[in-house]
Image 1 (cartoon, chains in turn brown, cyan):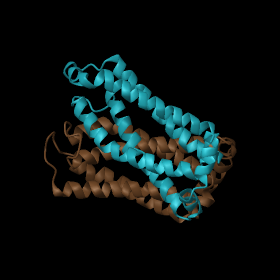
Image 2 (cartoon, rainbow over the protein chains, first blue to last red):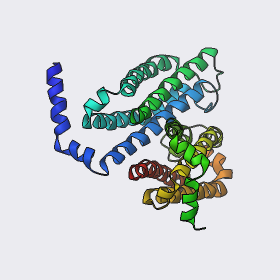
Image 3 (cartoon, chains in turn blue, green):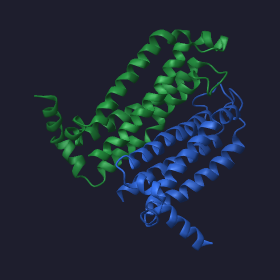
Image 4 (tube, each protein chain N blue to C red):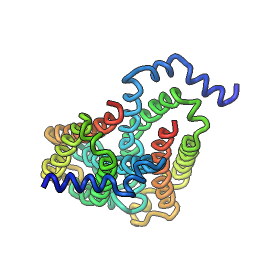
Length: 160
Length: 163
C-alpha cells in the first residue's frame, strides 16, 4: 500500500505538467497566489463566524445562518487552498517531508479542521441578538489560534 | 532627488538595513503582513459578497459595513505598517518592478472605489435593505473591489519572486 502510494507520488512528481509548474518562472508565484487568495477567504469566513460567536460583530445573523451562507465560500476556499498546497508539495516532496514547520503545519491543520467541524458546529446555535457565553470566547480564541498557527507554520517553511 | 534616488536612499537607512540584516526581523514582518490578509482584505471581500448578494442575506447592510470597517481598520493598520517596512528594505528593486507598480495602481483604484461607494451609496443602504434589491452601481463597486483585491494579492506575491 505504502509502496503503491510512493510510486504514485513519484510518477506524479515527474509528470510533465507538474514539472512545468515547478520550473517555469510563473508556475510557483501563480500557485502561491491561489494559495494566498484562498486562505484569505477561508480565514476571513472563519473570522466572521468567530466574531458572531463572541457577539463582537455580525449580530444581525444567527450563527447557523452565517455557517450556511458562508459554507460554499469556506468549503470552496479550503478546497483551493488544499489543492494548490498538494501541487506545491508534489513538486518537491522530499523537501517538505524533511521540513519541521511543514510537519507541524499539517498536524495543526488536522486539529483545526477537526475543531472547526466538531466543536464550532455543535455550538453554532446562537440566534440573532443572543448574548455570547464565556465558553464562546474560549472556542473562538482556540479556533483562531489554531488557524493562524497553520498560517504562521506555512510561512516558516520558506525560512527555516 | 529623483524618486528612484529616494528609494535607494530609503534602502540605506539604519532601520532598513537593520531589518535586512536581522535573521528573524524580515520573516516576522513578512509573516505578519501575510497573516493580516484575512483581517483586512478578507473582511472587505466578505462585504463585497454581501453587495453581490452572495452571502449575509437579510441583515442590515449598514451594520455589516460598520462591523467590517471596525475590524478591518486594525488589519489595514498592520498591513500598511508592515508593508511600508518591507518596502523600505527593497525600495530600489521595488521601484522598477512591474508587479509592485501594478499593486500600487490597484490600491489607488480601490481607494477611489471606496470613495465613490461612500459618496453615492453610503446614505442609501437602508433603502435597499427594505426593498431587498441592491442597486447595480453598488453591485459593480462590490465586483470591482473583489476582483482588484485579488489582483493586489497576486501582484504582492509575484513581485517577491523577482527580487
